Image (cartoon, rainbow, N blue to C red; front, side):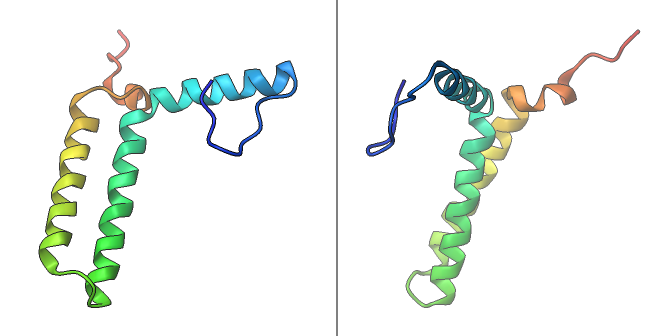
Length: 90
């Protein structure tokens, strides 16, 4: 189990199981989580451009990354979106 520095390890079996379930759920949502991270970076770039700290091409680059991640979500069948890929019932 990987923990961030300073995060205490599970002290009971129940806490350990909760952490394993959380890690498994996060693994299934990996692509969506990565896309959310890219959206956050895009928002940060927009704010820094408005503050005069960055130039617009940085916003464009971040927007392209968001679009690329959105395509991965659509094409790689992320488990969190499985309801959209399910076959219609007969």
